[in-house]
Image (spheres, rainbow, N blue to C red):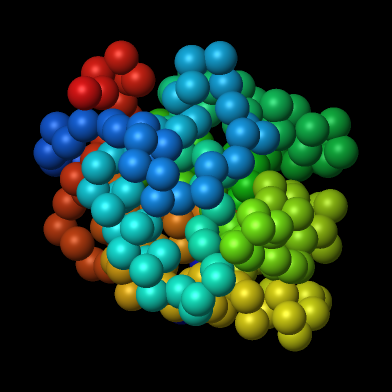
Length: 220
């Protein structure tokens, strides 16, 4: 996919999901990843991922230069919370762009928040992460995590040019490790990576997605 395909694109929704039944696991159990709590929720859902996604993150981390680690910020997101995030951002855009059609609002919202029916986070397939040093200090990535396109003037896009050379190099470093481990990036958000979901299937040419929306109570 050379041009950016948004989560709202019909091509993403057209991908079939053949749920493999893999469980959600708490990424904090083995201590391999640094886990930041800024997105912690009352149910601790944020710290969960499908087992296969976590295995690939650990594999990616092992290829990073000495002294660097992946910092995990958010994984699984319950469908209800995903809907809340989507509607909140859509509401902001409606206020700022009263002349936009419903279709324009939906598409623009999906640059930053996945539509609830598609969302990789609600399948336990996506992770928001960044790089940190051995002391847990975040490296410069050009924007704060979860900066929206308006706030960052597009610098949140993975391949944005309006960032420093240092930030660009750090994004390249993280991206190379994660791509080699089999994850794909959502190109409007440098921090968002996934495996096994519909967007991953479209990006890699896989016949089907392995992970569909899941409730936190069903993890093992």
